[in-house]
Length: 532
Figure 1 (cartoon, rainbow, N blue to C red):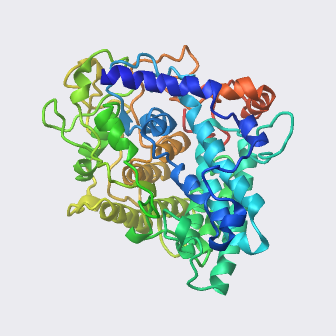
Figure 2 (cartoon, one colour; figure 1 turned 60 degrees about the horizontal axis):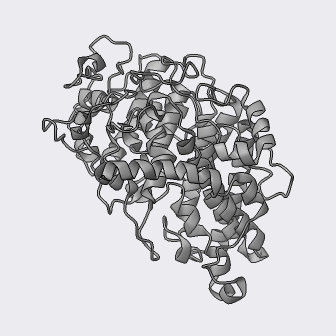
């Protein structure tokens, strides 16, 4: 009964999105204040009139609601990134085997518009001249939330949000990224000035679920976010990528760089939630370790495996599931579940990511602030083990022989990936100054992939951008030819409710996309000539 109920709930969410979830167009025309919150006149004294919109923004970078998170990320990017795979034998053709379910794929789009853009617009409209530090914070959260949306779909409504036009056009992804960098400029300048003028002040504290209102930490976050976005566009616009990356590193406010800098959605200020992955993996039984993760992490004899996953009920070993199967048996339900507790806070950004970004920048010859690609790589790996609370084995960083292990499915040999297969991730751990650019880039991205788990959206972006780490293609491709098995999925189609409510806007999005609205069309920044 549990399985049947859960399936109907997923279908209900998708169907409900077609009928009562606010479409992008409807949100533009009806930016209503939450009726459960006090009015501006009631709350001006304690800043609730403007601060009350922030918790909802922070809570919906990743949704804390399990079935929403499942549709937002778990059943797309977390699988496409090679981290996880569903063991469920009741889904039928679905995203994991490239049958892109429209009712699932609208969730991230709707979430971004309802909880990120809508709250940002309210903050912008309500802000007094003395509230510009709050506007700056809203811009940082807007960029953090919406870059995850454009990196799923491509073109999105952005610059015209809040207009009362007959239809809402989509901005090209290049235009959206240009605005991201400009908005981060405004935010960093405003917050830097505020911190200098009011040292130690924390007016944002009552509303902040991540850094306790510490604007110095938010400035580090903003700079690291800029560095992430700069690297994203390196193949589409290398000059801007270098400019923005070097700007991020040069900012005196610094980057996320230590365990205490990690951004988590903390249970403070009255917030209490169950980690959605805990329910998805335990109560639903809908997500488990992937075959690619087992191959890479076990090939490296990496003890982070036990921090990420649980031994399987199938055989007591760690067992991963090959991506993209038409699963028709319940046997995979016994494979390794995620090692996450209900009280585990959602991680928004790991500080170790900044070192891998700097390592890649230094590898490209950019000024990344007094270090080398090797030194930043070493710092990133070391910090990742610290973040996960796992002791790094002696000699781990000197291991010049271990690579990804062949994958063996103990239940079905047709899913095996044997030694010599070109899809095995054939890179060692130890830094090699004599290696080619691509070999060291693969080394950086592979360790970054291990470090930022479980952020499948960011890992999938890196895979599309660089082709690393090497992942296994789907076993069954149900896309009807729209997605290449050997080139992998490239994006999520636009939301179905937008086709119904903003068709002219969607048409501008398809034009800006430059290809058909399916999972095989590349995004603007996805132009690396070495990635198939």
